[in-house]
Image (cartoon, rainbow, N blue to C red):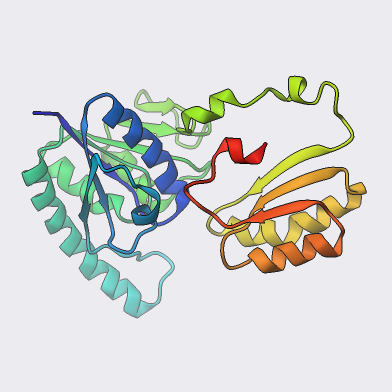
Length: 252
C-alpha cells in the first residue's frame, strides 16, 4: 500500500500552484496524495491529475470579514476541525503539508492533536495569519523568501516550488545576444496585487517608446480593460486570462 500524504491548499493560485507542483513530485515518486480543499475552490479547476484524490472541508475565512461572516467562519472552523479528524483517521497520512490560507488551520490543528507531522510552506515575503499559526505547530516551515519567519532550526529557505519546464527556458544572455531592439516582458500578479498591476504597469511601460513586447496575465475580470490600455498606448501586447494551462513555453 502506498504511503499517503495530505496536501492542503485552496483559495488563490498563490497557494494552489506551489501545492500542485509538490503534489506532482510526490505522485511521481509513488506516494499516494490526498488533496484537502473546498468544493468551490480554484484547485478543482487547476488540479486535474487523476492520481490525486480530493477531500473537502466546510471552511471559510474569518480575518477582515463582517460580523456575520466571522460568526459563520468560526462555526465552519469548528466543523472543519471535526471533518479533518475524520479525513486523517481514514486517510492515515504520514504527514500533512499546508500552503497557507484559512483552510490549512483546521487540518494542522487536527493533525497536531493526532500526532501526525505538520509541515507548512509560505510563498509570500510576509506570512499570512494562517501560516503564522501553522508555524507554531509545524515540524518544518518552508519559506520562499529569506527572513519571512524569525530564524529557527525548523525554518528552511526553500524558494517556491515551480514546474520542471521552467528549467528549460533559454537564458536571457543567450536569447537576446543578437536581438536587442525589443524585449519580452511577462507580467503577472495574484490576489490583492493583481488589480494594481493591471491598472498601473501598462502606463509605466508606455514611457519607454514601445521597446517591449508584453505578455500580461490579467485575470478574467480585468482582461478587456488592460487590453484597451495597451492599445491606447500602441504597445504590442498579449493579454491573457489566468489558466492552469499557461506554461513557460507559451511565452516564447
